Image 1 (cartoon, one colour):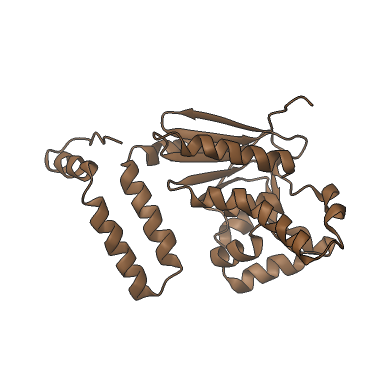
Image 2 (tube, rainbow, N blue to C red; image 1 turned 30 degrees about the horizontal axis):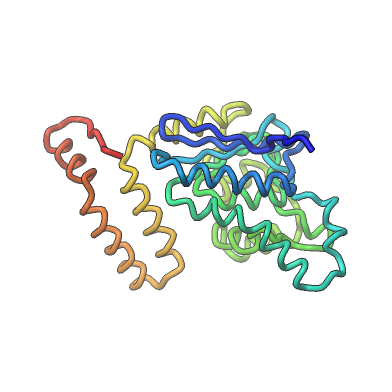
Length: 262
């Protein structure tokens, strides 16, 4: 069977751009899962990357969900079969969340089910004003299984996450913004431009400082405050051993723009 690229990757100026291209609605099928892993491998093997952008092709859907037509194959086969499928769907999203540098998701169309879960795995979400985002799985007699029940609650709070998951109703871009589900709302067609502007601003900074800042936030978030402050101090200590801090402080003192090594 001829190979069809459903996830594209370009890397330029320290910015990696992943595009889901599985029209008409960019569903999270087996090919997309497999190709996400391959592209993440490429990103991880490129030492110059500082920021990752993720979006979908077209303007209809960022990702409309999982491959529902494959679900009958998982039914009634025992708990372990469906559990394994859940973990299979979670894995590439876990890898995206685990990337050491900032990730920006650009929602250029509906982001439902697996699409919402992919967005939740990113650090920052930019939504075009026409999008809808949500987890409608309850309407099919199931619930989110690619990280939705966990990441949504951590992002917007347990009560609001329950409301969204229990009703299955999607949110508009403005509704998502009001609860912190997305960071920025822009006009249609302006998502990628805005994302690239933000990515370039981030990429101006030290790669090591970005990595340590993200690790400090992510690891500390799950800890008690006292342990989290210890985590912050640990990474603060590590960043002070880099060449980039020497350059950054020197540039400040000399009143010039820093020229970071990474």
